[in-house]
Length: 137
Image (cartoon, rainbow, N blue to C red; front, side):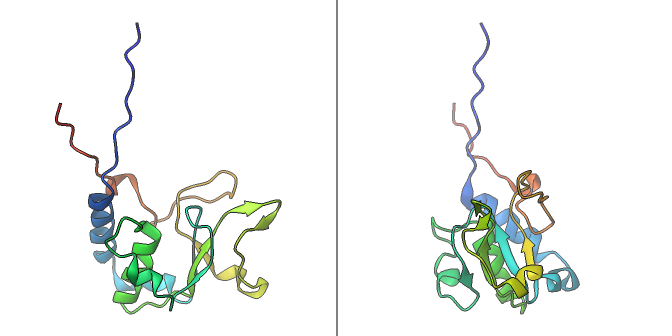
């Protein structure tokens, strides 16, 4: 009989903290690449401008994710992205679209996606950032 494989549970708080530490260790010149860009991820369903209060309100809550953390940390380091936008596409159209003349400013910072032909970048949540819930058993 085959042994059943159980997926490990990600510790969201520790994972985001590891991502934050890695991001804060990046040189400022690398972080400047996000200046005046739209941060895009498949995990988001809408468009949020950088001045939106939701970015600061989600920090260290259960609603926090790596893209919200990235936007918050960019502001802390003096870099101003334009905002956060969804990478989701429905019927050939983006579900939350930026104006056509700003589409070249979209920087995908989410997971890799074959459908979007997007690969993870250094601003994505990487395998080295993931922390798992310790198993007591």
